[in-house]
Image (tube, rainbow, N blue to C red; front, side):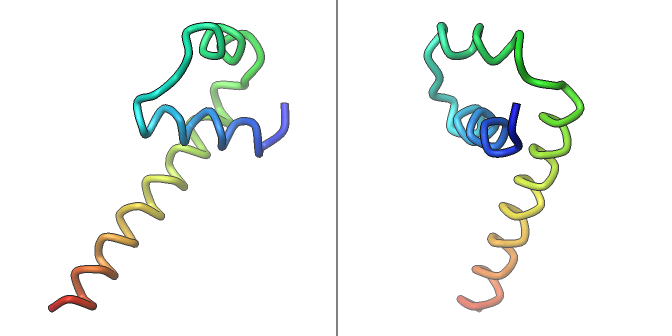
Length: 58
């Protein structure tokens, strides 16, 4: 699977919106290590964005 497909699955997981059939499809195809790495990058981007927003507002 591509990194883009993994990123898409992680993004839907962040939102909490996912079809059960898509979830089951991804469960068998995606590499857990790739999911963890993409999720950590996503969390870093999210936290960095929040910090930047707070510094911009304050």
